[in-house]
Image (tube, rainbow, N blue to C red; front, side, top):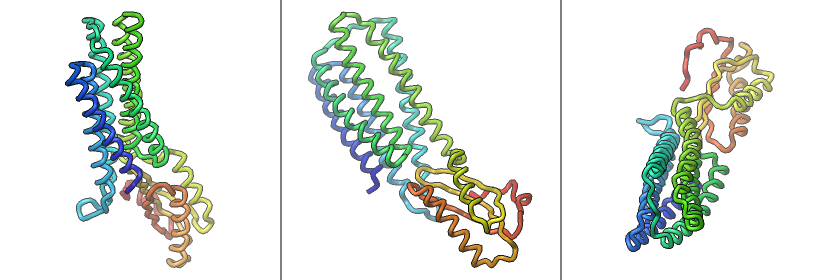
Length: 297
């Protein structure tokens, strides 16, 4: 099982534990704050389940309906999760502003503190684990999942800080002000996740540094006279590259094929953490004018 799938299983299990914990305390104590947090954890559980479904289906082999596989499910999941974070932030912002206009005293402080403290500790370990997996795999779904739980971590910490500050100062305005700050952080963090997912869905080219690396590999092969129509895109852990390489017209097809395999091996080594799919057209002359508007993928 891929590390990404293990991570989503762990996050789903932890979200389930938090739902049971918070909902039980909310029902027995009657705390609205804990009940709201329990509902938030329930949303986390649903998102984590969706992420597991996305990762599971993105691994399926190409078939007669999906010739290039289902890897785009992953950026789609990232966009959806980013949107959930964004709308959650707007909901928090709305309620914070509403609370400033209509102040409401917090109740059931002790029960809320215990539950939020446990939630904070559990979520902190989960965030550290998800960030580790995200850095190791560079997976957009795990990155968005880590961000999702990181916002929960800040929310839980903010609740704890708020309860302590209100108990010490008696100032109820601290709660909505902190809520506004958290909502702005969530919006700021969610936008790059949505942007990256949308660009991947739209088949945006690879980053300039990756394209430069491909060009350097092509130019380092003396048998290749020139190249054109270099096209790239990325879909989750898959990289797609197409290029026309110009050889001398007198070279044999066998020798041109050997050189092409050599170049392809170097490019795959550069993208060693991803699955690289490459098409290299072996041209006996420069036909760039004929292929200007042609798309390979």
